[in-house]
Image (cartoon, rainbow, N blue to C red; front, side, top):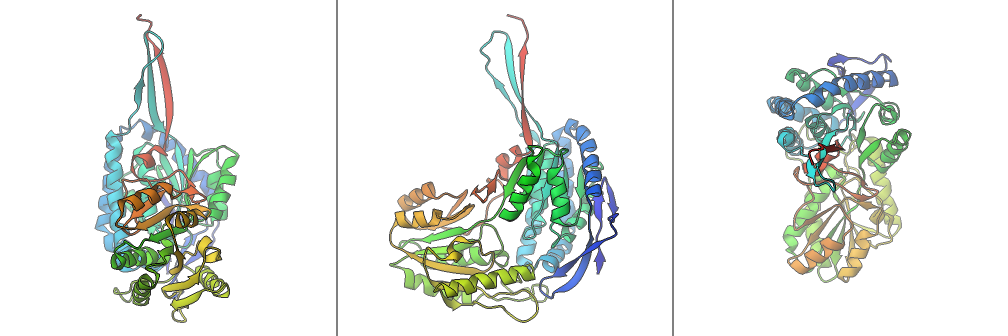
Length: 479
C-alpha cells in the first residue's frame, strides 16, 4: 500500500491531522493506497502560498508561462504508462480509456500553452475627443479546482492549464476516491521548476477541504466538476464572498434516432456513448428515443451490441470493454434504479444485474417498455443502463428530450439536414452531436444548461472563465 502526499507551496507533505483515508481498487475492493486527510488549516496554508505566488506570476509574460505547461505535457508523456496503470487501478478505466485520458491530458496542456499569444483586450471608440478606452483581460487570481473521480487526470489539465496560462495560481482538491494520479502529477509539476505556490494539491474530504476552498475570500473562482448536490454545496459556500463559480454537473443525455438514420452506425454510436468509462460520464447517452417505424430493428441491433460488451478487471484483461463502477454506492444506485424501472413496467432485454461477487461490476443493460413518465428517463443513472422510449413525431420527441432538469449533452441520428437543423436548434442542451458519439473536443466549449452547470471549459471561452475585465479611460488632453 502506498502513502500519498499533498503538495503545498512546492513541498510534499503529510497532513497535520495525522489521519488517513483509504483508496480502493474498484475491481478488487482492495486498499491500494491511503491519502492524508487534509484540514482547514492546510487549505489556508495552500491558499496563502497561492496568493503570494500569483502576484509575480501575473506579471510573467504569458509566453514564459506557456513553457511550464509544455514541460508538464512532456513530463506526462514520459510517464504515460505509469499514469495509465494508476488510473486503471484506482478508477477502473479500461486500458484504452485510461491511455486516451493520459494522452489527451498532455495534449491539453500543450493546447492551453498556445493561448499565450491569444489573451487579448480591446480598444473601444470613445464618445470624447482625445480619450482612449482600453479593455484589459487580467487573471482572476487564485483558483480552487475541485475534481471528480470519473476523469481525475484530465480534469487537472482542464482546470490548471487554463488557470496557469492566464496568470492564475491554483489549489486542487482531487476526489477522495481517485487521488493518486493527482498526487503523482504534482511530482511532474515539481520537476518543471514551476515557482512554489502556483500549483497545490490538498487531499481529503469534500465536506472539509472542498467547502473550505469554496468559502475562502482568498479565491477568485471555484471550478467544480461533480454532482448537482456537490454543485449546490459549493454555491452555498461561495455565496458569502460572492465568489465566481464554474460548475460542470450532471447530465441525462438523450439520443434520438430517426427512420432515415444509418441504423447500424447509429446503434454503435449509441452503445459507444453509453458504455464509455463504464457508463460514468456526464455526457454519456442516458436514454434513447427511437421512432416507431424502426423501433424493432433498432432495438435488435442495440441488444446485440450491448449483449456483446465484455465486462471485467481491466488490470487483468486488456480486451474488456467495461471495468467496474467506481464504488459500492455507485453499484447500489444503479441496481436500485433498474429495480425501480422494472417495478414501473420496464422489461430487461439484456443485462440488468451485477457481474461477479467481487468488485463493483454491472452488466451492459437495455430496458424496453419504457415510457416518458418513468423515473429512469428523468434521473441520472451514471451506469451502463439504456432505456428505450418509442416516439411518433419530431415535435413530440424534442419535447420529451427537453423534459429533464439537465441540459449537458444530446445526440441526433438522421440523414436529413432539415431534421438535424430543427432538432439541434430546439434541443435545450449545451452540446448536440449529430451522427456521432458523445465526446467533446478541447477546442470547443463544454458547458451545460439548467442544472448541468454554470460556465464551462475548453477553447477560448473556457480560458475566459479565468479572466476578469478591466476598462481604462485615458484622456490625453491633446485635443
